[in-house]
Amino acid sequence: MISEKMNDLLNRQVQKEFYSAYLYLGFEAYFQHQNLDGFANFFHVQVQEERDHAMKFFNYITQAGGKVKLYQVDEPEDKFNNPEEIFDHTLKHEQEVTKSIYNLVDNALAERDHGTNSFLQWFVTEQVEEEATVDKVLRKLQLIKNDPHALLMLDAELATRVYTAPVAETV
Image 1: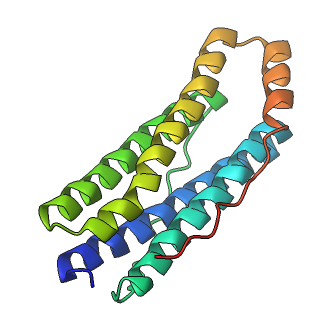
Image 2: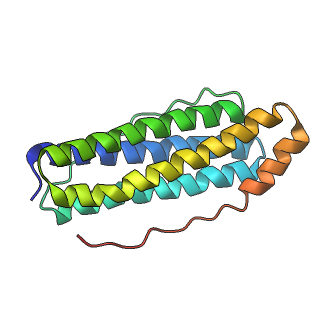
C-alpha cells in the first residue's frame, strides 16, 4: 500500500503526463498547419506515449492500493515561431519531467517504498531516451538553420517514426 504522500505525488504525475500529451498535441497541430507532416507525426507519436505514461501511473496507483485523483490540466503554451523553438521548449519540458520522476524516486526511497521505486525505474530509463531523442532533432534543426531543403529532409525522416505501445505490466 502506498503512503498518502506518495499517492498524491503519483496523482500529480498523472496530471503532468496528461499535460505533456496536451502540449504535444498542440505542437502536432502547429506542424500540421505548416504542412510539415513528418514533424506532426513526431508529435503524434509523443502524444500517444505521454497518454500511455499517464495511464501507467493511473493503473499503478490503483494496483498499489491508492486512490486516483484527476487534477485539471492547464492550457499549454502555444506561442512558437519555428520548429527549433518548439524542440527547444520540448527538451526543456522533458528535462522538467525527468526532475519530477527523480523526485518520485527520491520519495520512494525515503519511504522505503520498494514497489514504487521498482515501478519508477522504467520511467527513469524512458526519460533518458526521451531527452536524447528530442535533443537529436534539436541539434539537427540547429545545423540546418533556414535551409528549406534540409528542413524537408528532416521532415521526411520524422515521418518514419512509429508508435510502439509499452508492454503491459502488472504490479
